[in-house]
Image 1 (spheres, rainbow, N blue to C red):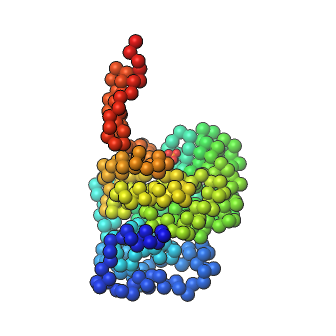
Image 2 (cartoon, rainbow, N blue to C red):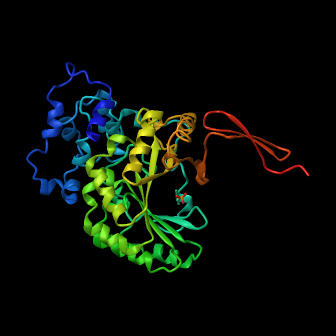
Image 3 (tube, rainbow, N blue to C red):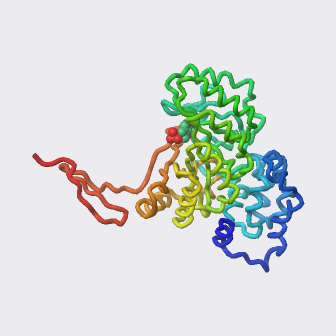
Length: 392
Ligand SMILES: *Cc1c(COP(=O)(O)O)cnc(C)c1O
């Protein structure tokens, strides 16, 4: 069913122009791999696609992609799990899966407002592996590895630069910081992707955080259920559920990312009692239209992910070809609110340059507020008056 959605919604392929065997090639590339190996997340990570030659054998690359792979990967690593690569349409360069993980030459273009560290995260890093921007919560990134690398990564200045990962035995200042700052009650474990860390090391980190009494909630922000659903094993969920209240935000950008495998992985997480939030980045030509976004939000609810944020694409160097307009994001929210389940409506946010944090933006429903009378419009653009303060 989900597979069918993927196929139906892609622009039709002109098979006469491209290699007719490519589609079957990408499906047959791993045909001889046992299901035991295929379903082993270590195998998936070890067999990621990393080179031009490997990708060229699977996908009918455009000259733009060829240049992108050769040049842009010097700055930001390319790696794609075999599982995710199989979702790529090898004959369609507009494939929404493909554009998220295969570099384009457009990444070499840096516009005047783009920056390497657009959210000024460095400025808010008091100790290695911690970003402390808000009063009561921090971002903790114990790894810079991801299962696959999103071409629009906000943290591409360090993510994928494996050699810069703070070694495990040097995380003590981070724990020390969390212990000393009693105002912190919420830790976002991010990265990189924390679920690329093995169970033992991950449990070491989480139990260490749980031993700090003033930390009320812990959460992992991840894309692993989408890039590497095999990682969500019973061992992992049994471990995580010992540390409740434990939350998770899962990054999903397109309905065709929601395969049976990803749905299964999310079911295991939800069954472990972990509330799942959805994070989506608004991406030009990928999900910046009402139909795709509404479908995505509704599909997320079906796998028990409650859409949390729709993030505007940050002003990261080399991402202008992926960034939609803010007005498009607002129009999408306007076409969700009231038109579908309120649960399916995320908060649209811009993470502000220079580290101002996330700011919610959306359609305006409050038209005026004068003399105790409020004028409002509903989702159908009908105007209503509400008496806020009775005249005395
Ligand atoms: C997004 C973010 C958080 C978490 O914000 P919430 O709105 O609580 O989800 C925390 N720290 C940093 C630095 C962030 O960018």
